[in-house]
Amino acid sequence: MAVESFRAFLDVLEDEDALTRITDEVSWDLEASAITMLANETDDKIPVFESVQSRCGETAARLVGDPYRGPQHRPWEWFARAFDLPVDSGPAYYEGMIDRLSEPVEPQVVSDAEAPCKEVVRTGADASLLEFPWPYIHQGDGGRYATLATVVAPDPDSEWGSWSRHRAMIHDDSQASLLFLAGEQVPNRYYFEYERNDEPMPIALTIGAGPAIESTAEVWIPVGRSEVSFAGGLQQSPVGLVDCETNDLSVPASAEIVIEGRVMPEERLDEGPFGDYFGYMNGPRRSMPVLEVDAITHRKQPYVPFCVEGSGVGYGENSTSTFALAAGGPDATLGLRVAGFDVELAVPWPFTSQTVWVIATERPYPGSLHELANFIFTTWGMLHIDFFVFVDSDVNPLSPRAVIEAIALHADPATDFHQFGVERMPKVPLNIYQTPDEKGSASVGTSKTKTAKAYIDARADGDRLPQSIGDRAAREQARDLLARAGIPESAFEPPHTIEPDQ
Image (cartoon, rainbow, N blue to C red; front, side, top):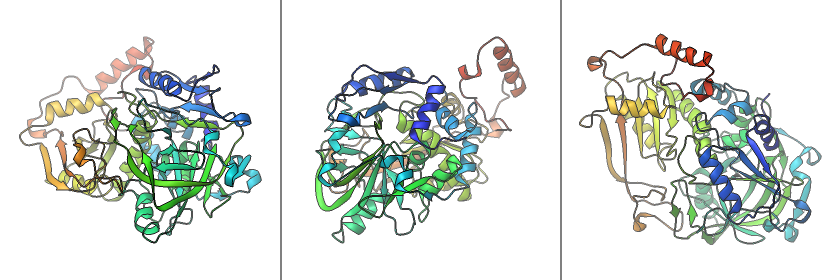
């Protein structure tokens, strides 16, 4: 049975001995994030900080460091257990996610009495952001952050609104600045509809909404469709929604915290610098839209999950990289298949999940890879993704070893490295190679700098492919011998190839 709340997800982690509860008092000022970063880098247990210095009083909020970060060699594992999907095989897990995303389930509206997020309700001046121990994550950050926040925003084409992930920098009791980058769906609606008409945009920030909801907030949902129905598909049951106190939005009833407010037109507050996913401080400060808080509702003793970006390298170094691989990858694979491309798997490269993707695919005719790369670059890959590696359909893109091997053996630098040329187009201003002048517009957070898109064709050429050493049956026999010797399957790297039954 798939889990339907963040607390049920923590129970899954606890059952797998993947969670540790720290009862000693810990400060939100760098201490909680330092412990979390060490756990991320060493693939240790997920830390839950039961006692955090704050102004919480009876609220007694608790911090959870990178709860969605998966094990290094199986970053999809906690999502697989949460959604009752295959654990041991990455390709099988992907196919299970694709099946769930293909069968959305509509949400169900519940009453306030049935909604755990309404256990405590504060409105107006009684609603204070500083009642919660938002962490100061990196030395040099511009402030304290909510980094695992699912934004619920209006959508005229969808009954239940639009969900997406945007970090929020806390300024005081009633204001936060939101990282709204033009080119993304919700920021576009704010900049080009609400602000252009001098109207505030109602939104709600939900904290701790659970794996299904936070997964679908991370992926690319077709225009006119609601993320909430795809979340229902992932958990195979309707997501419970409850009405907000101060606007017309509906929010996940099981959320730990819901912050209701308005994004004000023509108002800006500083946002950043911030230690971002490349592992470097991204700055300087920029002006970003302002969230004015109208109400806060929450569970008693709520959990506040947070992500430590830039934790280091590893298959699942933090929640963001795990979301990309365990949720974004299956969604992208499904989207490319629906668009008519013969794709086995589309997988973000685990070490730089926002920049490089690996796609296992056939090449039905000359130029097909160029068409596929161009399709992605001009749709969902425009802002973040710089290049792709194309591998054969039987190569497992979840195995970094297999991908590097394919590049080294099959990609001819003279003929298989392809550029689309240098163009001016919207670009997230985070790449290290961008100069300060290229970092972009302070008003909308993106740059229109010169950027290049490229791909590598690392598929084998059958005409020049030598005979391989050994065969699949021999490799499987070796794995069986190791298993009988007491070496668990979990100790193996993800299989080098995609097996036919996966």
